[in-house]
Amino acid sequence: DVLASYYINDFTMSGNNFEVKLQAGADSRSSLHHVEELFIPNSNGDMVPLNALGTLQYEVGPRQITRFNKMMAAEINAQSAPGVSSGDLYAAIEGIDLPEGYHIEWTGLSYQEKQNTGQIVFLMGLALLFAYLFLVAQYESWTIPVPVMLTVGFAVLGALLGLTVCGESMSIYAQLGLVMLIGLAAKNAILVVEYADRLFNEKGLSLMDAAIGAAKLRVRPIIMTAFAFILGVMPLVFASGVYATARNIMGVALVGGMLFATLLGIFVYPALYYFVGKIGRFEQRRELKKQEENA
View 1 (tube, rainbow, N blue to C red):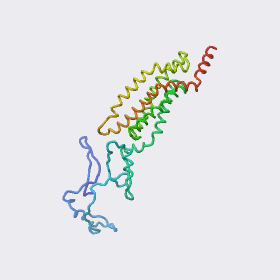
View 2: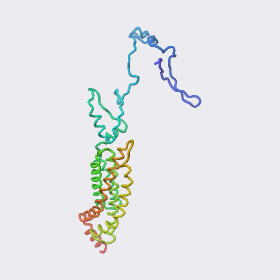
View 3: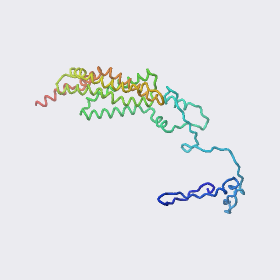
View 4: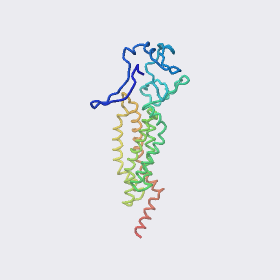
């Protein structure tokens, strides 16, 4: 230890902390001969020079040893080619035939991405559950949010079609786009369902008339907000340069999902409200409520 530097303690002087280290002088640690002169205890406890117990010689070795998870490791950085997803890159690296005793571990963002692979079903389910519960609390009803949540399926279907047509994979960026589509698709459906429910309860219209009336009045704001978002996301679809693949995949998922959900949603949103209202017996419950109030 004294040939290099042996840490003793710290001391404070003039408001600064300094380390105390024990180290031999430069003229006493400049060659292998100085190591042989070090005295160490033998089996009898007597101090003898190191050259009395063995010999020293130079050997070639690494200047630095890298360890990962307490094992010797070699760090490798890999970058996918343009148009190749990170999932394909991981599969190609893990498919390398390594010698016995060697294996691959991931670190940093790659490790996080690998850990989250295959979690899309859980994340989508959790996002749908929270969105549904928020709408239940807002409308104080368990049935009105149902047609809103059913429209999410069309947005997801549109995103999957867009990814398939463009030849993109279901990477973590596409999964993030799917989670975002839950709120975006539900927002457009709320414009129709909320107004249809208002016409049904406040104006006394039938389910059919309320659904058609809400569709006629809300088609313009739905198209305006949806296409404003789609045009805003288009730069992601046509992005180029470093990390453009991530932006392309997310943009394709968002544009495909919103475009598909908007074109079908104009007809599907009021239809879903009507069918859910029929199943939930909205008209019978409204009449029963009126009879109770009159009584």
